[in-house]
Image 1 (cartoon, rainbow, N blue to C red):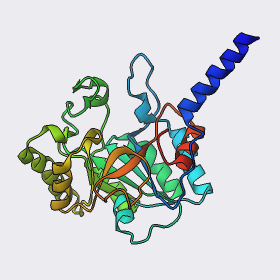
Image 2 (image 1 turned 90 degrees about the vertical axis):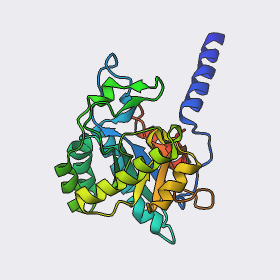
Image 3 (image 1 turned 90 degrees about the horizontal axis):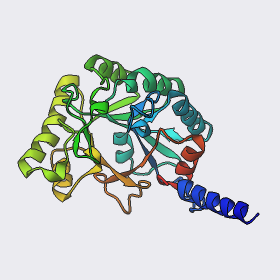
Image 4 (image 1 turned 120 degrees about the horizontal axis):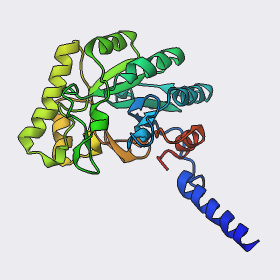
Length: 270
């Protein structure tokens, strides 16, 4: 019997650490900015290190239904950052990198439930060497083999009025590791190219890997973006964070709806 009690205690500790259900709920007056990458089926475990970046379409739809049923209103990042007063239960869906499944799988669900999103694209995403495994500091064959959004697909999404396109630099670089001149090139030129290709104003920026420093933030502001997102874990509390260091809640493909609901209520990854 004692072994059963020990096993039960271990299970309770594991669940508490994994889901952090015991944390205090954060008021919905603080916007939730959610971070996604791919909306796609998982690869086999033997072939993938990055299934956490792949939210299955059925799970994504469950999340949208929950948001809709619980009266959340979606905004693009530009819309949210420009609001003088943020409404109750505001949510922003963001997608990093620019994977083709954002169009094939995510976009039709966003249309179905009338949700907006901001998609950050890497300009040189077709080079097959843009994606780096930050843990190993080398190119990721798995991510570089993924199909990426083409310009026609982006144009279609822009015409819907639901999608904002933001910059994720030219080459998905580690900004703090670059010289000031290189930072300016990656941040400024990516904005200019997006604006030229799609005839839009590019207001939103996401720091690759979530890596940023004071110089990067300064350049993003100086070249006239209106906002920038990080991978800092939390809600967007304007008394703590500027429009150029907006925190996000990462939505993992390895977790289900229960975890998603907890993240929304607790206002953090875990």
